[in-house]
Image (cartoon, rainbow, N blue to C red; front, side):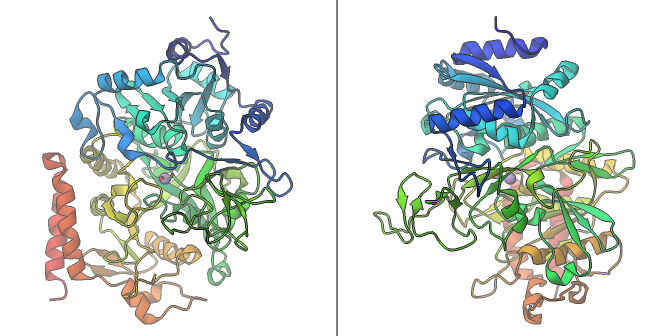
Amino acid sequence: MENFPTTNKKLIDWVNKMNKLCGPERIVWIDGSEEQKLTLEKECVVSGELLRLNKDKLPGCFLHRTTQDDVSRTEHLTFICTKKKRDAGPNNNWMSPDKAYRKARPIFKGAMAGRTMYVIPFSMGPVGSPFSKIGVELTDSRYVVLNMLIMAHCGEAVLRQIEKEDDFTKCLHSKAQLDINKRLILHFPEDNTIWSVGSGYGGNVLLGKKCLSLRIASYVARKEKWMAEHMLIMGIEEPNGHVEYIAAAFPSACGKTNLAMLVPPEGLKQKGYRIWTVGDDISWMRVDSDGSLWAVNPETGFFGVAPGTNSKSNPNMVEAIKGNTIYTNVLLKPDNTVWWEGADGEVPNQGIDWKGNPWKPNLKDMQGMIIKGAHANARFTAPIVNCPSASFRLEQHHGVPISAIIFGGRREHVAPLVYESFSWQHGVFVGATMGSELTAAQVGKIGQVRRDPMAMLPFCGYNMADYFKHWLNMGKLMAKPPKIFHVNWFKTDEHGKFLWPGFCENLRILEWILDRCNNKVNAMETPIGYLPYPFDIDMTGLSLTEAALEKLLKVERLEWLEELKGVNKFFSDFKKDLPKELWEEYKALMERLKKYGK
Ligand code: OXD
Ligand code: MN
């Protein structure tokens, strides 16, 4: 029997069992110390898992390359394994727990032979906070360990907490042979267990992130009456020094990270606005004794998309990734720094691309396609505290109070720049009917529109009909529910050009949202919700034609009626499970639209 640094029987028994299954050469417990981290980094450099980047320009930074067919989340290999198929819902791939364990066990069997099995005790959320949940990840990947050390609270303090709580999510990961044909990402919400095998890509293997903090947590949250959401959390410090917090859900790669840490545009900066970043991806929210919704970000790091990140799109992130950052699948420059399409500065005239091949600009493949230096879903993993706008309330066990919830998608048409729902129930309908165009973060056809309710389609660990019901119920638990809004930064003109400048200018819309929350401005009532009067959006320092703003704020009746056909189809998939309140909202919107403009 090994000498384990814990007395918790559940943990010891489980580690022993998984040890037997995976057959590693040895077991190493992650203690969270700097010393252990440095040792792991050195080992990774020797093994080639990581390449140490320029020590002067990028201190503490490394580059990792994944295998070429392991570069994004593989949703078709991701399963919710509940006893009843109905409980996974039409939104998830389902497998029975028996079958799933049976399928995965032979892949795990002996998969860690000759390797080390690392035991990572981690806490999502500050250790000991009532919001927080504990997991333990077993993995044969040092890359996973080093990423988890950035993304979560790991080590000794968590072990002590497990001894108090006697409960944790059992997360098992093995790279195995990194074979896409033997890759499975399995969630067993009824067993509080996650098994991931055959992948090395972050979204599939950093099991505290999407797997625990969204899929498993959403299942637990429904039972315990709280919410686990795919949302950024940001504080907006108003000119009078008061900070208001909002949570916002956007599908992957829609600019959520950029919004979470925007730098106010000059025109508004003069007024004294300042942004505080609490989180860029996940929000856990609870109703507090004051009857309002409070949120924490369970993560301690960013796992962000590199391409397109630059001083214009996200100056705070550019600062955040200058040290102690792990880069994945970006281009390596001759001076041992990194680059990606849409990075600051000149395009380098040579380098090593994300596949490890020599690269120069305009190099073409056999089909005549330009070869990219970085993969479109290349990532960086960086500590939140590196970010100049990191909130001073990150570690507060109580979280932050949420004034507004914002939904958004990437839509060329239909959705106006911003609108406010009429009520919590209507807001749930707005979130439930969100649609967006696919991006490189998912496997699939880029550009295709898919319904992505609350940006949770790939992350809701149970039947979404029950999830909608849960949202409706949460509204009833709150004396002061946040107002719910919808934004669309991506509306285009007839030539396909974006009408709204986006990026930091989005603060102008957040300002209107907060003004609405504080009853400072009136709004136009339209069939879809309340829209701003154009004069209530502060345009200081921004040149946008009146015609563009008018188009951005227009409710196109025919487009909306067409949109409702898609909503009908989407809702129908849930059959009789869909809460009747959502059909009521659907019918009411249809009626309002029919009357509109006649
Ligand atoms: C992410 C995603 O990586 O949503 O955050 O895909
Ligand atoms: Mn995400």
